[in-house]
Image (cartoon, rainbow, N blue to C red; front, side, top):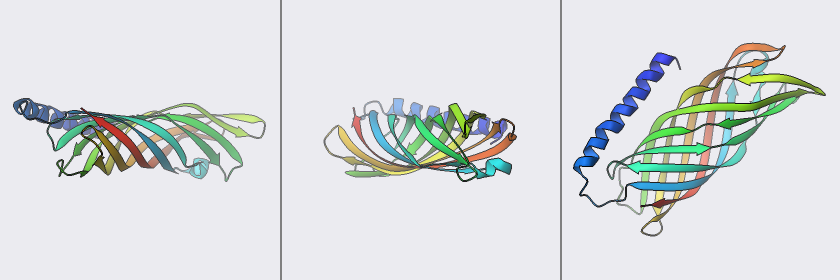
Length: 210
């Protein structure tokens, strides 16, 4: 995603958040719980697409935990921040070279809840993410190769449902999709290779709403 498109996307999201914050002020007397905090168990299915030697780069599926903070502007519209840290095992050339990386991909969503009064309340959402990589390593036998993956912005979407257990406690299931275009360098092998990252995240968790 180029920078101009990213600026337009972030500006549009900020405009939506601002507009509905004005609506929420006007609806302050309405009785509904505006905040939600929660945690999830996430199964991450990561697909990598590149060119040259980097085209053989693969990431193994992994599991991690995530934290969520959500604010409801109205019963139907909310903004949610999801944060998680994942460790991904990597392979190049079908395991001839192996390695790993840590990833922090916080993602921000604007979510629509069409039936907030239902015990099982579905939602859809879309937004932006920032993928931050560190401690990237590759190993060819006893030799270490420097791997560098650029940090970058991307976009994301989700669909899921909150399931009311008690007045404040909810179970949660959803599927998130994250897309991010970046670049990578492998020392002595590949430089400035485009890397398209797609992550499908299958999640279950609990939320406390107040």
